[in-house]
Image 1 (tube, rainbow, N blue to C red):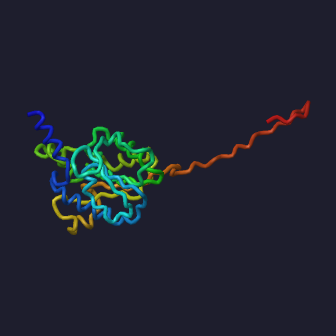
Image 2: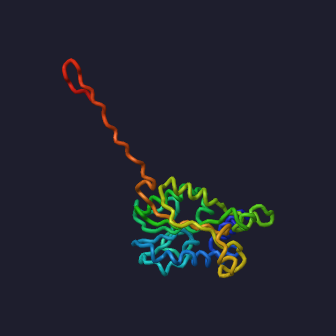
Length: 233
């Protein structure tokens, strides 16, 4: 009985189709990401998790696209996200869709993604927004134990802080799909871009400080010895 509950619980967040209005979230994400794919260059695009796998990346200029999942048969690689079998700085772009929401250690997952990304690599990150209609559902007893309301929801400010510690430059941050049960093409969801149920962050890994610190040139004081005429610095 216990194993059956575990299997059922793991299955509830395995795909967009397994969560309420998940297909609308997926369509909305595809619409927001579509203008970015022609701008992202590289050799290797890694999709982490089933949610990332279902994102449409056909418009991407990166030819080698592959996915990694903990289980299943529709991915190229099976493994643990926190210990990915890739060399340091070997991936050009990493798609991390909704994975922090279901990770037991989101900080470690971010660090692992940072490890495998090349310098100036792309990190595409999305999560459920706690300051939305979806977030309100976490406080409703009948909904709080269902998906996706029971998942971890991190605020945009918290995610931006994590990325700043890893020295990422955020190129775009937005929330969308303000009303989850209507189409992303509806007038409301198309024109109101605040308090949306999905947060999307597109960032690049930088190696130099984003805010340069000015270097102060220290002029050494020179003292002339009165007795021996020796220059002392």
